[in-house]
Each structure stands twice: as C-alpha cells, then as structure tokens.
Amino acid sequence: MYEYVVEMKGISKSFPGTKALDDVALQLKKGEIHALVGENGAGKSTLMNILTGQISMDIGEIFMEGKPVRFSSPKDALKKSIVLVPQELNLVPELSIAENIFLGNEILKIRLIDWKSTCKEAEKLLELLGVHVDVTQPVKKLSAAYQQLVSIARALAYSPKLLILDEPTAVLTKNEKENLFKSMRKLKENGTTMVFISHHLDEVMELTDRVTIMRDGHVVKVVNTNEITKDEMINLMAGKKVEKTKRIKRKVSDEIFFEVRNLTRKGEFEDISFHVKKGEILCVAGLVGAGRTEIFKCAFGITEKEPGGKIFIEGREVNIKSPIDAIKYGIGYVSEERRHDGITPNMSVMENMILPSYGELKKYGLIDYEKAVSITNDYIQSFRIKTPSRDTLIKNLSGGNQQKVIVARWMAKGIKMLILDEPTRGIDVNAKGEIHQLIRELADKGVAVVVISSEIEEVLALADRIMVIQRGKIGGYINDVDMTTQEDVLKVAFQ
Image 1: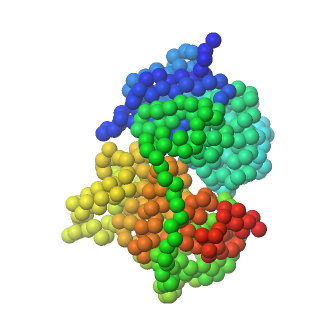
Image 2: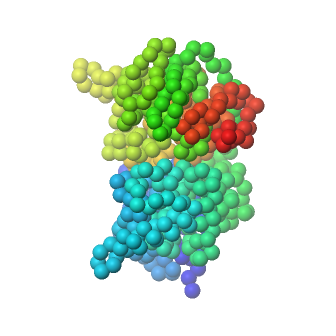
C-alpha cells in the first residue's frame, strides 16, 4: 500500500543564470489539503510546473500511488488526474461559461458534443462553488472573481485525484472564499488531495492540514499546520524576522493634482467626483465588482464607451481619450492583470522597464543604451528584483518580481501620478512591505498615488485618505484613517 498519492524526490531544475530548485522533496497524502508557501522566486511555481508536465526537471523522481511516473506535457498529467488551476486566468473570453468548463474535456453523444448535458453539468459544478449564473453566456461578461470560480469548476470537471490551486482566492469576496473552502473540504472528504498555494497565511492556517515551506529553491520545513504559527512561517519563508507594515502618518500638500467631476458610464458607474493631492496616497476600497477598477481605467483613458464628466489636472480641464493622453499628462497605471495588461512577456526585464521612457532615452534617434542599462540596474538593486540578469525575459520571473518591474517602469518614467490596482496581489510578505515602502517614497517625492486594494489591512497601512466605492457610486470617504478599523471600512462598503 502506498503512503503518498504523489511523491517528488530529489527534484532539481536550473535556468540560465539561476538554480530554481535544488534537491526538493514533496509528499502529498490522500485526502489532505497541503499548503505550499514561500516568497516569490522560492520555487513553488517551478515545482508545480514540473509536476504538471509544463517543464521538465533536470534530476529527480516522481511517484504516483507508489509507481514511478514522468510527465512530458500537461496532457500526461491530466491523464493521471493531476489538474492545475493557475493564478492567472486562462479562459477563452468569447466562449460560453459551459464551453470553457468542458474545453478539451467535452461531453460527447454519438461523437458530437452533447450541449444539454454540457450545460447541466456546468451548472452542477458551479453550484458546488456557490455560483448561480446562465452558463450559456460568454465568460467575458463575468467579473474576475466569477471567472476564477469558472476556472476552478473546469478543473473539477476532470474529477482530479490531485488538484493544485495557485492563489485561488486572490480576487474572491469573503462569501465566495467561504463557498470555495466549503467545496474544498467536501472534496477532501471524498478523498481528493489538494495543493493550496497562497500568500494569505491566515487562509493557510484556517484550511490546510500540512504545509511545505520553501526558500530559494529549497524546502526548509514540512510541518502539520496546527503545529506552527503564522509568524514562524513568515520567518522561515524569509530566512529572517519580518516586520509587519506599520502605518506612518504623513503630511500631505493642499495642492490638488488630479480631479474628476461627475464621471459617468451608463450601467457601470455614476456621478463619480473625487480629487487626489500632490504627495497624497488615496486608497480606494470596496467590494469586488463595485466598479473601482472600471472607474480608474476610464480615468486613464482605457474605455470603449465615451464617458460623461470632466477631468482636471492642476486645475486645467483636459481630455483623456486614451492611455497615450494620460501618460502625456504624467499619469501611470499598474493593472491588476499584470500578465495580460502589464508585461510584454517575450521582452527582457530591461525592455519592459524602459518601455514608456523610449522618448526620453533617445539620443540621435537611437536608444541611449548606457543610460537604459544604468536605470535598469539601479531599479533591479533598489527594488530587490530577483532576476538572473537585466536581459532575462520577464515571463521567466515570478509574479512578484514582474510586479516590481512594472512599478519601476513608472518611477523611471518620472510620472506625477500613479494608479496601482491591487499592487501586492500574489506577492509575498517581504515584497509586499517593499512595495508599500516604495509607494510611500513616491508620495514623499510629491507624486499623487491611487491604490485600489481589496485588502483592508493594506488600505489602512497606506492611506492618507480612503474612498469607498459601492455599486458604481462613491459610498463615502474616510479622512481620519488613524482612528479607522477594518470594520469601519466594511460598514461603508456594505451600507
């Protein structure tokens, strides 16, 4: 009788200039929820990519139910009922919800797709996750949170023996998260083994049975979750004691840099008026789907429909019809979907970092290479970006390091206002503190900063002022952040 559903032994993997995994072992028991935690770049994704056949290992062995296996493609892993739900959405926007759930795993009847059964089974899978929607509508009509749940439903359609969930709660509301956890516990009762990858250690403590902690390509500890504290986990991940981000009271200028009056886009948001002062950190809170992202994308010029309302910069009315206009006025934007809207995957770290600064870097019609190298090296060092070199393709960096490059891009550009949408989503505790510090430094230099965040703890740590969006309208402002609790913010969001 085998002890582990899956066992990985002596796994090593190198990429040019870096050793991603060094003699790593992972053991997964039948019917357990096993957490895999570590900083960005610790090797979690590489290990799971090997297990699911997306990349090959250099050395090592994999056993499934006691028998040796080797996966040369994701299809090989799927045949053995190993399914990964990636952090980044990989749905086909134009296809229906039901089509996405059974894509590549179609229900057939006399060699044709049985659409009636497909829709019925899709509804059942979503019901397990507490989702009740019309499964015939295009998946692009759903919010990011619901799309994440569709991705999980797609994985469940394979009846997995091993289900790997990479940051599955990043965009979920509290209720959606509770429904997901309920479903995971049911799957566990039925014998499904799960790997839960998360930077939200409270969730790890609440949900999981055992935890494997990784640092710099090594496993540093495997322990029953009830035998370790959150602080001990953080210290093992970091290799040092990590200080929690503390709120720092800042003095803010009275000069308004950016002002919006009566911004309206029918059916999405209505009569939005706000301002951001020079050197101010305005945090935007609210429930997922309240319209926060849509409002600020529109203000940055990312909009299909012409909105109503007016925008002023330093008291002068301006017309922002596209991101090019916004950048011209000194505004930068960091998207919540970094892989889709933030990075150019097949370009290097340096090319991504200097992307909006080409104009300033041109010398006699050519890019000033020495200056570009100097800027890139400075930010790699000051942001602690883990990369083999500035010439490494950005797609080979961890999510947290990609995010650091995107923020550095706008700092290098010398912008006057920066909008950051979920800037620390999927980023480890150390990197999160560093990003918070960088945001403050930017504001201290007089840059107007907007932070859209679903993490109320982050909002309270950073904000000079809080604006709460509720169902496409401004639900209220919180000016005295020092006296504000998480409950106070939630009350405004839910009122």
